[in-house]
Length: 126
Image (cartoon, rainbow, N blue to C red; front, side):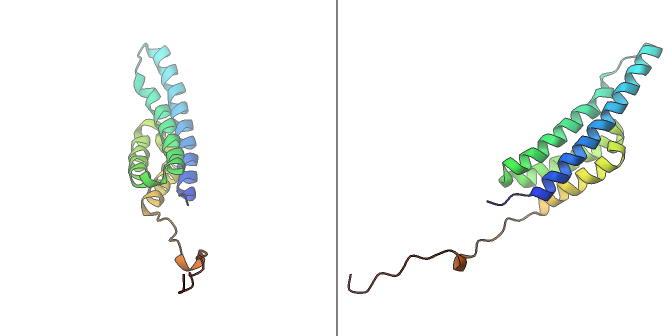
């Protein structure tokens, strides 16, 4: 069975960038929390989005039949990464977006019946 490898690869790489952007904001948010005595868990949403985007890329490879759902969820995560993870420095946003679109548009290869070996026809006297 064929799999949407390009879509999954772009999604996983985009998820890594989104995770890095989320890590940057988490470190920055921690510094702000220490200085101004403010704490918000919103700083860590970018990290979670990065991990979930990587998981969507893995699921595209493991369960190709769910590629449409995984592609839609990846696109949603890509747009959510803009405010929460700086869009993975924009590179992660673009890679995840393209990966999600490729997953939605991917079609498995058609099996050519003529290319598969056919059993020999039985003689008419049997």
